Length: 325
Ligand code: PEP
Ligand code: MG
Image 1 (tube, rainbow, N blue to C red):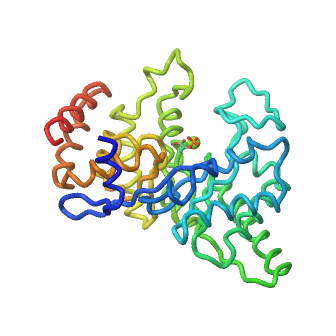
Image 2: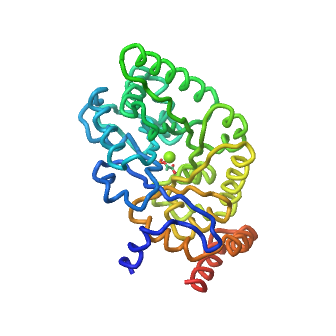
């Protein structure tokens, strides 16, 4: 079956009735972005920069970061690469930057930490801009944004980095599109304001689920409660894509849900056209999408939204896949 899936990767991802869906790769390790691995993907939808940081013994220098980011960009030819600024804290500790907190998932993580350490943040932004150079591949994504002010502050640092480089270097540097992760629930209700500030949104369904359900995504004692098929989560995801469409904000999903067969079908049904996932999911998701119609999926989605819990939703999805494949 894996062989059958693999053959799918040379085919464009679209539904039977012609809706084009773009599939991207989630990556963090350089080995995960070798060109043959990215084959079949429309680009890298999430490059987690915390992974190379975690592999170092200290904060990597600007020159070291430029080298890593350039290799990632080069690995996918001229396809787009969404690079996320450092998202440490929470479940992602840096061995050389210990953080002790009672409640790390609600604490000092992602953009909060970067904004409190401009000396580190500016180095990362400068490295990304230099790696991107004058090309059009690079896009920059901000993790764990919960206040619009964090976006404004970041845009100022980005201006600063951009202006410094323009003075220091002879070559011209492009201004990359900027996006924010939609993973803190409050931001769901501010997408109109988000759209005035940035170019795109990427839905982090892992953290969005964790924060909407108040369930730790890594705690085995409550793992049965962590479920992105909870009808409340599905409604939030549907609302997010509808608001993004209304406010002309480009949107994708890069959480695990996008790489799950049930999840991908529901997201496409809601109107998402960009899904980013681990390499292992790419072929399978393409296979599925190429065998369903968008019309059919609308019915499936409304059936799911009528259910009262995740288990019932999963049953509907299970029956749908069984009947259609
Ligand atoms: C997410 O939260 O869904 C996400 C993609 O980010 P991470 O898993 O790296 O927190
Ligand atoms: Mg996240």
